[in-house]
Image 1 (cartoon, one colour):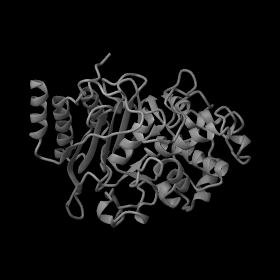
Image 2 (image 1 turned 30 degrees about the horizontal axis):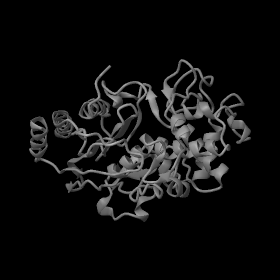
Image 3 (image 1 turned 180 degrees about the horizontal axis):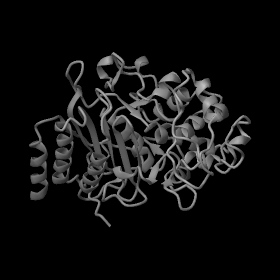
Image 4 (image 1 turned 180 degrees about the vertical axis):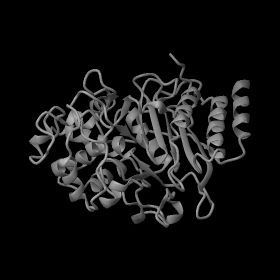
Length: 393
């Protein structure tokens, strides 16, 4: 009891930002123990210190954080500011961030898993079987595309100037592989642009409508989706960087996704820490949250298990497991946990063993793109795991 009181006092002493904790209920939660576990206050204090230091060093203007272990009260906090330029703005916990490549696991990976459930997508089927004008040949499969082992280049060319999703899809289909499929891991936005096109073709529905219908609405993620200017006031949208003289706010930061109209398989998702926490809870709950099922338990297991060819970086269906991009796992979460990052300054990581996760959203590209913050991601992952009681193996 004394330890609990001391921890509570330490949390209460964190006065430089808004810190909120609340009990949440969800379907499929673990059995409540006689003494409900709590997050470690000392680890949370160390985590706050790392984020504060990064903001003081001008690595990012601000951030929103969510740390949770199922069965315990979650920890939520905001740091710094929403914007530095053209004028300082306060940041609130309900701020809507450009989640960048978190789009890959949250939207594209989830919708791919649904197509696998329906028998419409087979991982080892050649891309050429669906897209007859695909230039990559008949040895590149959807497994290669999903796990970034296809040999396709990282990004679409931006010159000569093009616009519209059809133009992007044509460029992606025309992209030439730089190496044989299954021989090398190269992170590729082109691959996920192709996946977005595949999802729309097999479902007959635009990607943003599918995401809303099958992910955001069932999970009550009311602040999540593509094209945020259609549903949010500017005051809730976190700006990214200057595009010429104009500050991007509510317009996707990724240039290819922007040219596609804001909807793509690799980027375009806007969300909040609270909404992404709901998504994480669904994943750790075997595909269900509050009585709404998004995926079958077997599909969750598939998406979060290694699907990559033997000997390459470990990737799931949208998720990163063990690759050069896995630093947000930190030094404590075990192999078998999974997550992803976003170029704008976002990261999330989930651990099924401890049934814990964190969501970290920032706009580190504001007001202009600077150095990456992967070292901060690693520290966030390490201290979030320690706060959840995970012990390094």
